[in-house]
Image 1 (cartoon, helix red, strand yellow):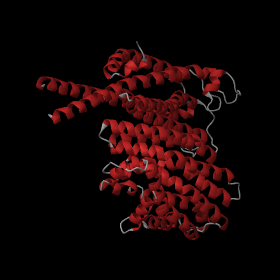
Image 2 (image 1 turned 60 degrees about the horizontal axis):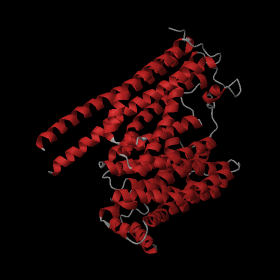
Image 3 (image 1 turned 180 degrees about the vertical axis):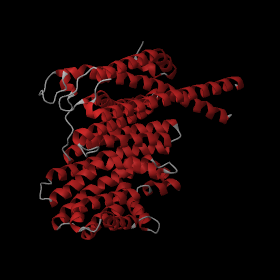
Image 4 (image 1 turned 180 degrees about the horizontal axis):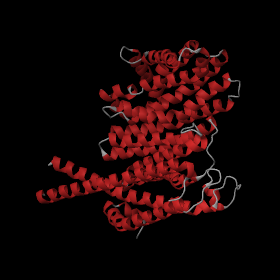
Length: 249
Length: 51
Length: 218
């Protein structure tokens, strides 16, 4: 019987992802190139924001991946706690640095965008602040992984941290919202897709198509990187196990 | 090259920073993947020979 | 349970247990702030609630690694884990002992230090109340962080990195409550949220801490 849990076998995971990796990578390169080139060269300027609107093709996908990576880590942590598949825990470990980089990209492009638009690099706006907090969570998570030597202990502790951290991250989001209403516009991308919402805030279709292509490209990039990095973590773990056995003899 | 107007610096620098970070992440991932893969092969070969 | 609590309290109060250290640290933070921002008393009274909250938070953080460290080193933590008492209860008692030796003195000292920072008269009640409600959450969350890092040689820095982001909601609602009361705004929402966080954390987090401790004792 075939089920998704077969891929929890490390050998099977490596075999399957190695077959898929070139395709996912290719797709990531094509989609990101098309999305970013289209966005950068072939979209008009926004009548209020000028050419800075072009930053959206990086800023929004990166912000989306920053959150989705944490969600993916939460799911794989749960799988590890419930079913104890090593691949799952290692995938969470492999994903964390990607999420951290995406958070930095979202923050950096946001700051560069905010400078001409809001006249300030940094504003203690709820969205910016919660991303900064999210970044701290990523740092703590990565630091805990690298501080513990035993693989299973590290996997257990980090997955519990991920669960607790998720609750606190959501709580912080609400706390920060309460603390300061901000400059950042609401999430307009989904409304653009559904073609509802007021026309003023909506991202219009001229910008939406390359944006969606770019978002798909970022997702593919994420998948490709997770495949590659999880393979690396599986091999590193196997190597540590072999070396430990060697020392025992 | 499209005319970026007075915001050229902002747009170009955000593309540069982001692409730079992404490329760095990809390169680091690939380098570590290679290193770990070859190290594992070495250890596996040694273990097979001894055992 | 009570025996364990008394033992922990005795250990903390004995020399080298760190009792009073947090309080001294709190005092130093409060003394240093005017040096940093200047002696302008209207500015000081404006930022006083925030400084007092931050000082309390940092003082709390300072003593976290002691919660389990001593018991870990001499092996009594293993004994406690095999005791008939569930580990969740032990963790809660440890958090309570930490709060009694660190949080409560800070709450009592806060009004005195408020004078130093020119805290407006309307702020004393809300500030003490917010600290009284908020600091238990700090102790419980801190116990979770201490349980995570208990086996590590140099866990102190990692502990702060792990615990401080978790303190964000408590800090926001606590400081916000004091600030709003001073400005004459309604502080009810912050009060309710703060109380909600504290009770939820006390009810749920000991399970996570105990789970983490079990992993570390394996």
